[in-house]
Length: 211
Image (cartoon, rainbow, N blue to C red; front, side):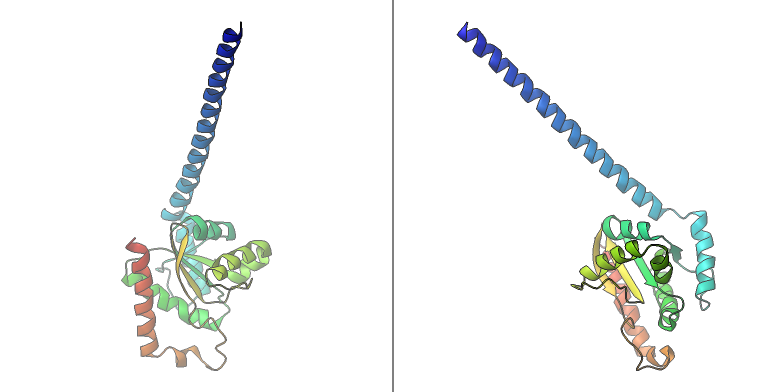
């Protein structure tokens, strides 16, 4: 009777081990599939050129008159920007059309991107994002600033972020600091500054394309 009971106990333990293993495997597969689905949505959402992207080019040109509708900028909302920064890949441009420095920075970024055959830069309108969802704006600011060891919840613009697989590779914030010492952006963007800017951005683009 004792041996029989021990045999039953061992059988029960084996059976429970099989059940637990199956449950753990099922949970693991479910998590993996969910992750794959999220990444698929992220990749497809950011890779495809949609009708809204096309209209977004025109909308961007209206906000930044120095550019035509043949620009590389496509609008993304706060949640989509967070997904790109945390899970996606690409270039994110955060700016304010009312900011004079943004108005001069955007055409330079557009020209450099086109020279590297970049056809899409994700654009986030900072004042619009802040007004629509202050909480999401602060989350975006936190993601970007933490990558620079900065605890601020403000996005200094112009700001361009280069992302690869959810990792921030580089951030360009030239002229994002207080530029009040320069009366006109035209005085700042000398041929030398433009060349330095182009070379730097080219390097950042290469860094996310080469990996």
